[in-house]
Length: 191
Length: 156
Image 1: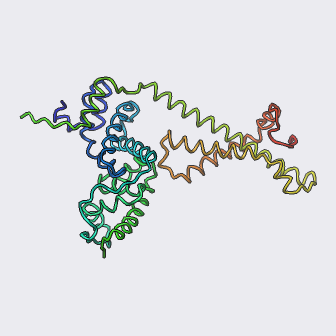
Image 2: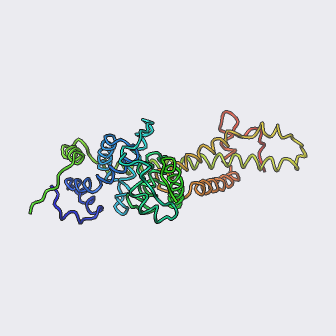
Image 3: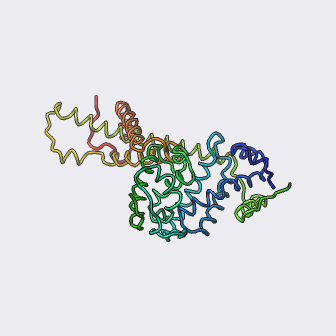
């Protein structure tokens, strides 16, 4: 079992230890990223069981390719990228898009302001829009997810999606517009 | 205090597969080979693209020189007939392959696709133009069983 002292180690440090033969430390990587990846996968494929399988496969794939990881780069972006690729493969294979599983609220209960970015960013997106996100295109859904829910920077998102940093900004901007439209269709009132 | 965290099913499955040896890391040589192959593919596509460009440039130069000098008023249909379309197609396909390979394996996704295409096309065109002054297009023409640059007389 990995002890809590290891929690303070950086990802690169842990990966170095694994590459030197301490394979037990990989459990730490799994612990660190499991919840985040599961949430991201669930957002992308909208099926919890499939998302769990996907995350498991991502960790396996990350392990087999660990020697190909550049220790000078962010491990988080790298592992997210693997998950992104796996998810895209699953989506292409299945071409299915069931409704988002989180149905804890109805559109009528939501009353939000679209007038300022601050409102959108902090209150609206975090608490009320999961239902709307489920009906957005994957292209926009994933940038919203990575930026607002996982709090990743433009650079990190660029590394995950393999798009230029400027495109990330444009995509987030367009995603907000689409989000607004989708939420309006769901009966979300706004000012 | 010994506070052990509960192990999730995902962690359990992943770690058991790793510990039992069912899952192993790829050896370093694997990445060296992938890297080498990608570089070689880019170089090969670069050569193909530059050669195709050189054939097109060579053809254009001959047509430009031939017109006034020979005083021939060849119609456009005739020019289109003898244009080396295969070279243009080959050049386009190899350029697409280069851009794909560069973005896929060399991690240049941070550069906008339009800029990357422009850069690759410009480099390829410059090399192709330079090559058209060499003996490369006519050398291939002599060796090829079918005509490579149809109806092109040798330039002096």
